[in-house]
Length: 600
Image (cartoon, rainbow, N blue to C red):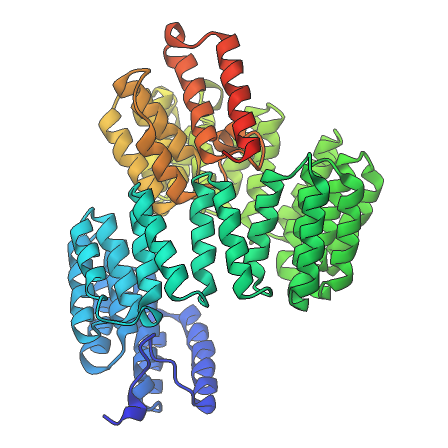
């Protein structure tokens, strides 16, 4: 082949403007064919591929492979990937092939594919990073480190992204000093590569070394004063280290950033500053920052600022103004995200004690935005927060009929299982949602429901858990509920396996880590070490979950303190005789809060 046909090392971007437009047109038409049938889409792809130059045909094959993967036709997807890898010079084919096998659980095959890909493209950045991450996941650190050792003969300016991934690998393994040495080396050798400072700062922030993180940010900003991500890191760190005692220092940072930051990021700067002032209780200054943000914001994004301003008004007790702001947000928001504004309006009404109005808003939203599962989930959570468990279960069962592929709805149904909701559990099973055989005749379904009502609640929950896994096998929330069921039945080995799946599929779900801490304390006693739980949690950086948010008292609470509080509550439940006296616990919590405030 000529050099013009060779794709670049990063996946084969080609510069022909007409070719890009042709490929976009194909993608749109291909998606239309998908809605008709899989066979018609594949036939169209084969026919259209002939009109493309050979150097870009691999992109068409990857589109067809992706469709086959989504349709669960794994063998056909493998054939498409093999055709890409054997006949075309495109590293992206090897990468996507390896990702599919990893998702199917074929970890050894995934590693072999990555190794074959690296034989053809020995120093491809994307393949090397994926291989390092997969080797870490398989606990094969030797392979990961051997890959990094291959980079020694090359200039750091060409390999810094892979070297940085190696530093992050060491950090995830708890080798803090080695990770810091890698970041220090990169900041010295390639000081112009600003993402190095960004990842180094994030690493120190996760490990609660806030002052060190601030020094890294300052060092990065000396290289480029206009690099927005570092300014946003600096705002967060100043919030931890300066507020609420040294407000002027934080506001000076905002003023300094506003003078050098690019115009398209100014609205976000003021928005973040407003949220930080809001959390510090400085509502007047928060309003001023929101006004500045509105002035610099694009019209299509202003609805976010109206929603943020409404939250500040709610905290000030100005409910009427908050409703006006949300109404304006509803008029300006794009149609596809309008449901988010309705959810915010319902929460304001609930906060104001007008539960009837909140229910009416959500019920209407379920009609207007039937495609949005978050509306149905919020309706369920509203009843849960109101203490109406049976009504919440009925809402969840009705929502599942519309959104049967939503893992959080399956999880909440399992979670709400109790003697009071036994009938609804049986109804879900009889309805055939997620079952291979579907619903039977009415007489048969009625007899089946009567039989199920005699079963223990835990058994009914187990059947729904199995159904949910067939429908949403990659939902971390569902796997976490399965782990809770297994622990309730004393099946600790199964619970550990389920929690591993939960963390693998949905690492941002914090409840999985809290349940893992509970499992460790159940298995190994009240003095069990939870350091590996903390380390895994720091690496995942979860951000939601009912238990997680309950233990996270404020946005500034560190991950280590969240796990410590969760472990304390679990010990109080499992081992009341080994729980520290309340005065000692209060003293420890006050000490932790003071240490956190100082940035220790």
